[in-house]
Length: 268
Image 1: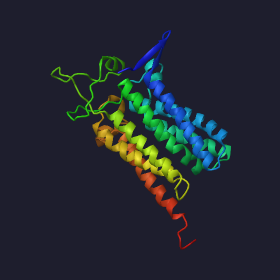
Image 2: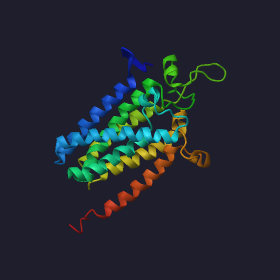
Image 3: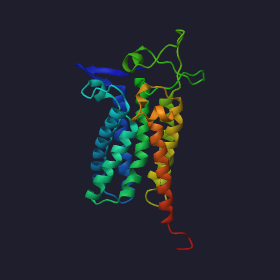
Image 4: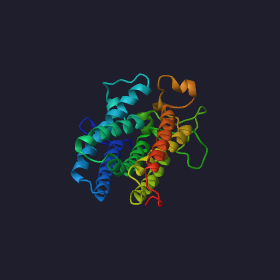
């Protein structure tokens, strides 16, 4: 566990921040390459990508404010935390939706170029979560259970010991998501060259991730999942699970709508 790599004066350089920065850079690189393959200008994609990252960061903090209790906005912990992923996804999506018309770019082509990069960014970002000790899973006796050390406990509060004082092993939810999203990135990258219509890659990403996130929430145990207007108490589902259901249904509807517009062989 190395949540903090070193310090420059009093400013900490964290492993989470390093992984997150690397994920963002690679996501932009992948998006620019795929956009170029679709005939879109690279420089516009880089520009749009930076605004999307900013929108994602703001969105993640906004949703964090709503789902978590006792959030201190003007605090170092709030600024250095990763926020809530779905808030970042929504914030980034809104940034694209607002700026694409201003840049006079085709929305669905841009979205398809960004989707694989987002999955790759997630894969690397969750490695940062594991290094920091956040977003941990429930206790388990499975072979893959991980025991976090004192550095992680001091940094994020990840539990180390069970009620009887023995070492506590947890589901490695961070690594599960990291490796899953790496596989999703590979699939989306493959799909981008074989898509039947613009928007297919984005829709595939949204549907796959929402189903995965809904499922993995059952073995997550960190308090950062929070509650949204008391819905967790009413439904027994976390905010991310409720959002996942909405995203999955929306993607299924969009897929049906887009497929109806694809010419069939008989029409060709």
